[in-house]
View 1 (cartoon, rainbow, N blue to C red):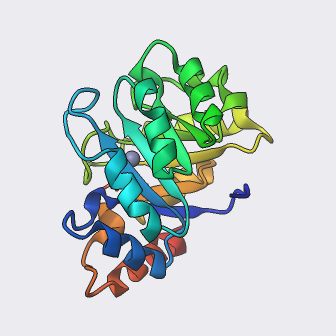
View 2: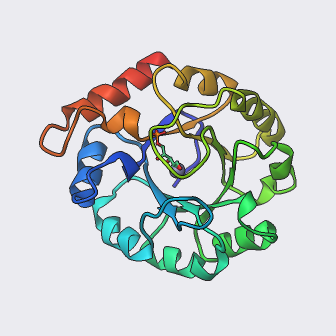
Length: 225
Ligand code: DX5
Ligand code: ZN
């Protein structure tokens, strides 16, 4: 994975057909997805439950771009090796997930993955400042994590701007997660984001049998920015 700041769309499979994830990943990549975003939830850190390392391992052969795994779990550390073995390219942990995020980020890189740091909407940009030299990505949550299809929280745009200034010329992506669509994407790109996670706005209106809508939906987001 080389670093560049061009805008990338990372469809979240949380909005895909749960009975057909492999085919959904292939379909959305064929329609132009830059990364695939996988939302791991534990029913504890967030009030919803999805899937874990075996699902990521099963999906690995179906993903030819970047497997971007977003952990909404606590604790994180006991599971890091399992996600490395499953083939995650990027592993993102929440700063709110425990008292030792510094150790967690070290362990993620130590396991050979890129390290991501996610911030909930209620957490200020300052929480990331001491960690910018040990991350490859900062994920700004623009909804409260746990569910797809929620409304974008506009107060987060200024947080993106602050983080972009703080990152300077470090090779660190700013990823936006939650409520990204053709209306909100331009706001966060203008503020400095380069990775746009989008679930409902990408998968809406399509299916593995009718995947053209995925391409149309992503093209609409790209055209808006
Ligand atoms: C929310 C997840 C998001 C979510 C995005 O907890 O982290 O990745 O699935 O879905 P949309 O784009 O529908 O807000
Ligand atoms: Zn996510």
